Each structure stands twice: as structure tokens, then as C-alpha cells.
Image (cartoon, rainbow, N blue to C red; front, top):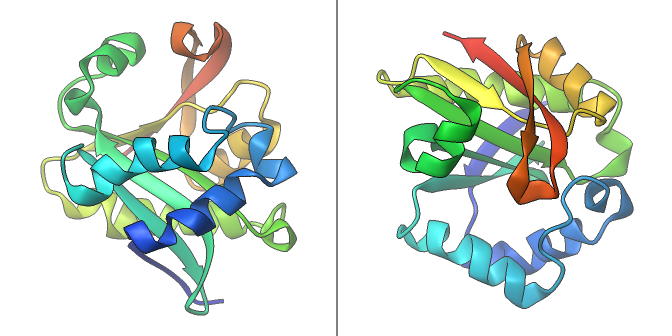
Length: 170
């Protein structure tokens, strides 16, 4: 299966919104419920005024998911919460197509994205993610991609939910 990535454009925000309404995604990505909220959150990054790089995950050239990366140091509150050093990127993703979940697709997409995109920046020496500690499928996908759980923490910005901090060093 050919996996690729391309930057998300403003024209694709309706697709992102549609994906965010899917039951299997809403279980873990619940903070943008209206289309306007999706636009307000993601458009600044697309336009370059926010320091997060947004991508579509492609399978055989077709969009099947979403992935984003950022320098953790660009978000001081988050950096302090997860307590990581300079040169660390963060990553978040979801696979939108239910038939691609639970089959290793997410792990492979994550592995390739980190190798090809995140670690293409020579200043980045590690990548972290922080899925909900109850999201067993996500934890397993990250671990299959080479990440390891380094600790758990409570996120006050996410209703004090327990999250797992996973890390992959270059």
C-alpha cells in the first residue's frame, strides 16, 4: 500500500470537519464540534500564523486521515506540561477511514511520517505524542511505530484526563 502525505489546504477543511464527526474519531477528538470551530482552529496553521504543520495522510493518492506536527517549544504551556527539552517535535493523527483502522495502517503511516517529515529537520532529535491513556488502539499503534511510553500525566486542558507521553528518539 502506497502511503504519502501532503499539506492540508483551506479547501479541505470541510473534509476534515466531516472526518471529525465520525464516531471512531469523536471518541478521542472531541473539542471541535462545529465547522466554524474547525476553521478557527486549523486555518491559522494553514495560513502560516501558527507553528503547526498540517497534513493529509494519503493511501494510493487518496486522503484517508490527518496528521500534524509541531515543535513542542513553540507551545510553552504544553512544553511545560510534558517537560521535554529543545529539539522535540510533537505529532497527532487519526485514520479517518474505518476499514483502515486496526490493521497496522496507522502505525506504518506514523513511522513513515516521523522518518520522512519530522526527522527531516536536523534540529529535531525526538518526537512525542500524548494520546488519552485509555486509547489502547492509539497506544498500540504508536508502540508498533517505535514509540515508548515514558510517563503518564494529567492534562488540565483536557478535563484533567490522564494521558500517556510516548517518545521516539532519532
